Amino acid sequence: MTLTGFIIFLVIGAVAGWIAGQIMRGGGFGLAGNIVVGVIGALIGGWLFGVLGIAVGGLIGSIVAAVVGAIILLALLRLIRRV
Image (cartoon, rainbow, N blue to C red):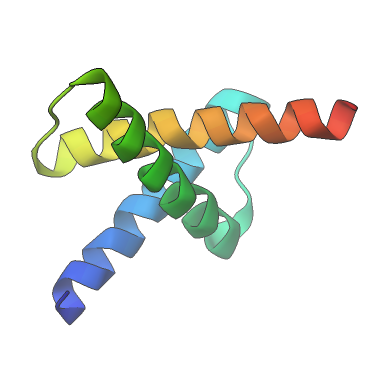
């Protein structure tokens, strides 16, 4: 992975984490928190979309997959906190 690819990956993670934070609890987690949530969400979303046979491409597709994964991550964390 090149430096440019890595920076784009972090930006997608930050955007996805922020969007998921807005949807799930009405606020973000700060820049570092958004990046972490978004990156983990990107891994979850990419895996899930692959299993379901949904092909995503380009910047928008990557953000959508990362947001879906981040929402799933936040929902699971919310369930774990309640228990």
